[in-house]
Length: 325
Picture 1 (cartoon, rainbow, N blue to C red):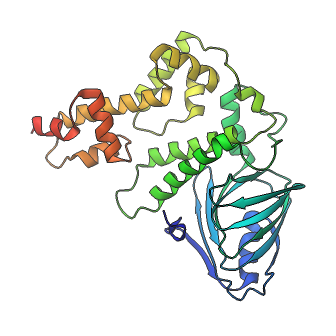
Picture 2: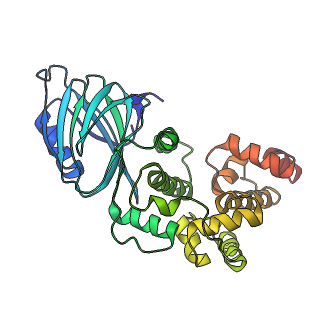
Picture 3: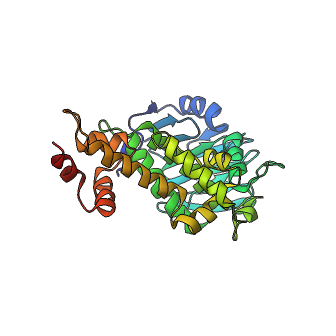
């Protein structure tokens, strides 16, 4: 994916005026000042910005060296370099940022100085404390009190950073589609996965609660989760909703669910959706096709849908449709 294409369907600002850029960045990212070390001769900023229900994504490039100062934000953030390089001085840490490197993360009250080279571009993930607290509470089964606080170095755990960026690139790629848009429930579930990935990749004061083998849920709680999935397979299914339905923590539920069914709850969701897809293809309407069935059953990638369908039923979805026409 070309950096210039990131979030191209969500243009925010195009300007060669540093003051205009600062006015846009101030309320979004608490940017206090912007300076152009080389006079900003080639300065041409391009920013795209997408607000989803739980997260916000921003793509930015500047066209010339840039220094920016951020102070006392009230959100959680993580930046992922897409091209070029720079240096970030964040909460008394100084770190090099460059293409394919891990993202720099921060939370409420953070302060930083950003020094970017002329070809630097990045993708920025932003979330509110309330969004992360809801997700974390469902995962650990207790209120998030005291508040969530990042405690490690600002750069994410390298084991997770690459996976985080792959997940974000997938989401951005789908948001940038002009046709064959993802069903809303798939976008929502991917958004929730981004939040979980942030909690797993960045060290914080609740990280220990996300490590080790969790206490197993009871069998009746797994049955409740199955019932919830069966009743809501065509809706967005979140970690919080499953944990609430099963009256246990997400980690405990996922642990026993895997021991009981051999797969995770979200993989079980996929199986249920495949079953409904087969039922639809076996009783087709005149206008029905494989694409419409795949999308209506929550599959964003038709190649992935066909492959999973074949693994489950021993035939391609197009073969099932032909058999019943």
